[in-house]
Length: 443
Ligand SMILES: Cc1ncc(COP(=O)(O)O)c(C=O)c1O
Image (cartoon, rainbow, N blue to C red; front, side, top):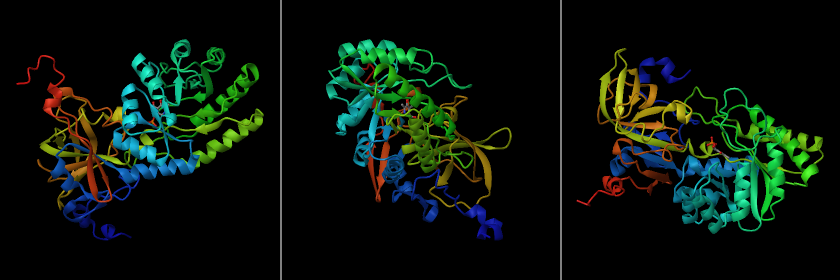
């Protein structure tokens, strides 16, 4: 029996328990309700850097990279940059030995600035622009993912000789509920085979494997197992009919993370074991020795490592008596729950409160109906303007999806590790915002 169970009144005076699936590894409460992440006081960080601010725990990112490498093996894991990218983050990923999936000339430029080895970079995207492709050719990216039949001719005419390509395929009829606007020639319709034959006919392109993407926030293994079965069967058929012997199948990412205790998450080691077993069974069945499997998670590498600090600006009582807490950020820096795939967990930080806990909703500063940061949580009933709130699980798709709606500057990205905080990306200033306005006279 815990102390709180024996003396229930203690509950209100204790900070909430930190679920290790939700908060960065090593996050801990300190005196006066302070939260410490990466050895850094978040109250102190908010004083030094202001709010809102994104905080990313380098140690947690590196830990996740190592867990993935341990589960899948060296050269079998890539990080998908669109979840979160800065020069500093790219250096952590490079150091840890992961490959990198980039989706634009911009992401590629950041990778170059980080000194990321270009042979470990993969360019993907269903609508690559001439700028994306030219940048990739100039930089010498290792691999390009081909995502439509029409793209093959274009690549063949422009890519350097011997360009390695992966072919993005859709592995069968779309399961109910998934969008039908995903790109990639479909197996079983003749499209994917036509794409293989077309690539085989292009001396400048070298088909090294297939690539797929099954969705986001996926907890169940069955969807990946189905992809492996169909793609290995396809590999065997393409080898037999077109001599296309590939070495690699990338299963993408989509591995679910835990935003709150209600979420399932993703059992990484069990997944790696299961998917390897399915692969070996299928390779034996089709009497081929390759391909090997790779993965390219985004969210699962950085989500838990990140949190956002907000300052509470006002508190009102909603019609149902629930507190509505408005913070100094919102939908511009925190994509709505539907986009990020879950409802976040948050905690009051920076002071110890003995008040009872009461339900609350955290909204942003933008006055829009969907400007909700956390739909439902419990906070001490004495929460008031000036308090600090830490929202967990914002490492993925928050910084990278932030926008300037209401002409609000985007928050800084602060890296923490070993007791030190370092600005990775500075706060966007009003001068930054005005600098793009061609009618601004500089006054
Ligand atoms: C090829 C590929 N891998 C990985 C991802 C990342 O997904 P997640 O961040 O959910 O892991 C995507 C996203 O669309 C993708 O296209």
